[in-house]
Structures are given as structure tokens and as C-alpha cells.
Image (cartoon, rainbow over all chains, first blue to last red):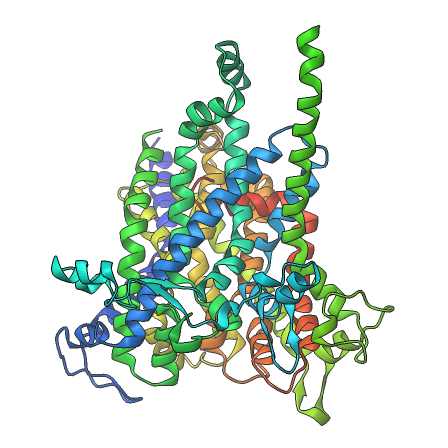
Length: 333
Length: 289
């Protein structure tokens, strides 16, 4: 018995030893580094040699006055909203279609999901050539050329080279009205939709919508057939069954899809680098790209640290409640 | 009977509509693949933006050859070296990640200790952070460790930041294995390492496959760490080299397309051959292992 007790305590020690390297690595490389970045964002470090003179919130205040950063925030909102809508709607529709006892379901599923396996860089390179509008010398190219060939030439446009921002004009009727009620700030190009961003949304949705499709399909398969049967017996048509029974049951899936895809879209970087770069007048610039640019090309470490911290806070607001919720419900089981 | 006959045609039209929609969707997903493959197979004479959608006249691998070997006379670097860099990076990093994840998952599933339920989500947070928030100190520390700029540095980084996801997948995998199995072995006098070696490890293969596919794919596809940690073209992984190639004005677009396909092939093959396991990793990423 005594021997057995000693054995158990030894095992306890070994178990702690096994996990210690990882715990230290996470403590240093995640939390320690985040702390250092947070600290750097309050300093004057703007050249290769570190300068840790504290300047308070100055780097943050400056950021919110810089045109590029305000454009980035606008683009992130545009991208996140459109990307989430795209993935959720397309993913759900594809899942519903695949759930209708389809011949060759496996092949379709494979086709919808394979983009998940490749790099955002590959996606970016491919879609840059597909959506590249062409030049006067070359004529239309890519999708524009395809539109032209099938008689849909009127659909041709500049894609990611179009610098147009849809926003409320200050001199328009609505703009004047907003100014009068003290919301003039809304009538600004920083509160709008960057059309060039739509191209990036298309590429990202192409890559990630298979993920929502897979999640919804798993969810649909989990709904017992008796439930639908019962509704049919009660006289509900297929549309009503989806609207009143299936959609509510799939809500938890939508929530986790929105959170997982939402945090990916806040961090989006690779795709922008390989597909468009900052774009005309920062029409496709995003905070993650700006951070990389200013830190590692411009040596503005403090400014980069401030952008990184803002990004982290945005992601944490989304992820931390989700993380606590999922691990807690799991522990109860 | 009458209701059935009146129903039939409408049902059939539904089926037609469903298949039509599925085929349109499939065409959208395959569009880039079509252009990549078709462009890659054209001869140099055939390649022009105006004929982008046309089929090639025959099988030519000129573009692939140029993307792979490069052409020093035109100052174009081939991707072959970088492809191999990615192999030398992804294989050891994947193996190390899987080993660490298995250890951590085992402890967190079967040897819970006070605070392990707090530690676990704290670890998981590391897989969601935007890596921008750790890059500045990361570069400094790698320089101090003399790992900056080398493939070893990159391996190290991927192993460290792979800890959360690999731990998650293994923890969920081991949690499914009944505790009674472990308890019985303990009574028989087996220790923590013995239980792992004789009971858990032999049935861990599916877990290892899921984790290794996941890690290999994400390390192969990574760009951010690659571009930050390696600056010399000779050390860069393929994603970084491909991005450089795509951003260069001297490389023709058909060569870029061929390069993109080359960079995609390994993970695509894994997906085609082991798609089922790939899916499991994917769903684990949303914490629903």
C-alpha cells in the first residue's frame, strides 16, 4: 500500500514534468511576448535600436488620426461582414443541397472543401490573375474576359483596382441631416464600404465557405429524421421545416462558425499580401498588413506594437468568452 | 394515387434544380483550378492573357519547368530549393509537434491536476491570437538564441505555436478513452509512462494522423512566420518564395500559376488521400473535437 502511494506521487511528479516544457513555452512565447508587445506600444521605439522611453497612450492616439489606419479599420469591417455573410449563407445552402440524398455527394463535398487545404498565398496568386481586370494594352483578362465572352460584358469592372468607397457624402441630403443631428462623422469615407475589398472577400469565401458547409452538414446529419417526419405529418412544408425547426437547431453551429471565421477575418494577412497589397489609396489595406509594413519595413516598432495590441484586443473580445464557455460546458459533462 | 402522379413531375424538377445548383457551385470552386492547370500546360507561345480561358494545344510543361528550376539568364529563381526547404521544415516540425501534443494531451486528459482546467483554456488561447502581437519580441529572442534566419528557427517557432492545437486534439482524443482502462493498469502497478507506452500509445494512431495532417498542412501553408523569420531566399519556405515570385515583374504570369500549383500539390495530395482525417482536424479547430 505504501509502495503504491509512493508510486502515485512519483507519477504525479512525472506528469507535471511532462507538461512543464509546454507550459513554460506558452507562458513565455504567448503571454510574455504579448506583455512585451503591449509594453512596447507605450514607448518611443521608432528605430532599429530600442528606445523604451514611455510616452503613454500617444501611439494609440496618433494611430486614430492616421488616414491609413482609419482606412484599415473600415476595410476590416467591410471584409469581416461580407466574408461572414458569404461563408454562412453559401455554406448553409450547400449543406442543405448536399443533404437531399445526392448522388456523388462525396465528390461534391470534396470539391467544396479542397480550397481549405491550400495556402492563402496560392489562393491569392490565383485569384489575383482571375480578378485582374486587364489593362488597355492587354484588353480584358481573367473573369472580366469570361464575362465578355459569354455576353455579360456589362459586368466587367476594376475589381481590386477600383478605389471607390461607398459612403454617405457630407454634401448630400442625408449627410446634411446627419450633421444637423450631430452625427456628421458618419458621412465620411472612413465609414463606408471599400469596393476593392469585395475581390478579397470572393477569394476568402472561395477558400473558407467549405468549412461552414462541413459544419452545417454535420449539424444537419445530427438532426433526427423523426423530427422532420413529425413536422410533415403536422402539415408543414419543406420551407417551413427549415425555417422553424432546422435553422433554430443549427444556431449553435452558426455561432461557432461566426466566431472562428470572425477571428480569422480580423487577422487576415497572407491573402492581402499575395493578392492585392495595400491597394489604391489603401482600398484593400488591413491592420495586420499595416503592422507588418510599419514594423519590419519601417522600423516603427512602437506603432506596430500598438496596431498588434489593438488586433489582439479585437480577437480576444471575440474568442475569450467563447473559450471560457466551451471549456466550461465541457468540464461539466 | 392521383396525388402521387401529380407530385412526381414537381419532385423531379426539384431534383434537376438541386443538381444544377450543385454543378454551378462546383464550377465556381473549380474555376481557379482550371485556370491554374490549363495555364500551366500551355507552351510559351500559347500563353497570353487574351487566351487565358482557352484549352492548351497539347501537353507542355514549360511553365512548370521554369517555375521549378528557374532561369538564371533572366534572373528568375526556381522554387525547387524552397520546396525542399518546406519539406525539411514541415516534416520535423510536424513530428515534434505531434510528440509534444500527445504528451500534453495525455496529462491533461488522464492525469488532471489542480488547476489543469484553468491551464487548458489558457494554452488554447495561444492558437487564436493574431501572431502580429508576438512578432516583435519573437524576432529579438530568436536573434539572441542564434536561431533567427535559419530553418531551425522556423521549426522551433512552429513547434511552439503548434502546442495549443496539438494539445487540444490529443486531449479530446484521449478523453474518449475510458478512465477504467487507466485505473485498472494503475492497480496492476503500471506507472504513468508504462500506461502511456502499453495502453494509450498503441491506440493513438488516428489521433497522430489527425494531428500530423493538421500540423503539416498549416506549417506548409504558413506565410507569416516564414517571411518574418527567414530573410535569405535560399532558406525561405515555398509560400514566401512563391509570393516573391508573384510580386516580381520579370516572372511571367503563367510561370506564377505553375508555381502556385507546385506549392499547392503536397497539401492537396494529403487532402485527396486522407480527407477524412483532415476534416477531423478542421472541426477540432472550432474546439468541437
